[in-house]
Image 1 (spheres, rainbow, N blue to C red):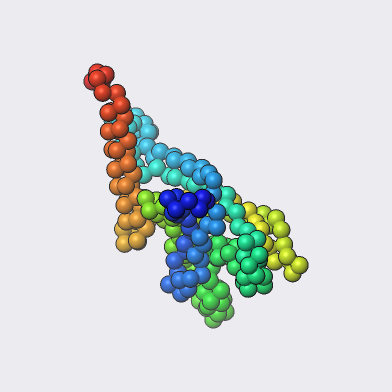
Image 2: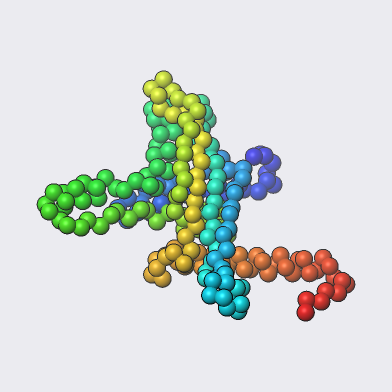
Length: 218
């Protein structure tokens, strides 16, 4: 990033896991923003299963969106300044914060084990943290991790990782997936409203660029 005084401030993306029992356990700010995001949207159309031609253009809900990205985590700068955490643990804490998004809490695992030992017939599985993918102020999305791989590329003398590449696959959770009382329901709805606003701005810009050209839509 340029040191020129007029340079815009770079916002960093993040993945945040909200957990009532430990709200600081999974807060990951991207050290370097991924250079690319691959977003795939699968339309949820009614199709023509019933044979009724009036149903073919109907939508069941928001499209199913998946996001894939690669993030790099590197302790080189922190090691050069002799940062205590980097010297003693490398980037293990940052990797652990990401991994905890897909682990049940150990306290709940222990509690369920005790309940099973006492003869409880049914034990409710633990709930994963409420996870948000934050990519600027216009994109704050509830997500579920679907793919997760870590390539540790360098280690210190104690075998702590000091450089790694993390590949993530995210499934965006929409109002089709969440209860109306879940905060993610309204986060996604707000995201769609912002997207509709962006689409309107884009359409107006396109129309202004073809001023004087007559277009007959009907």
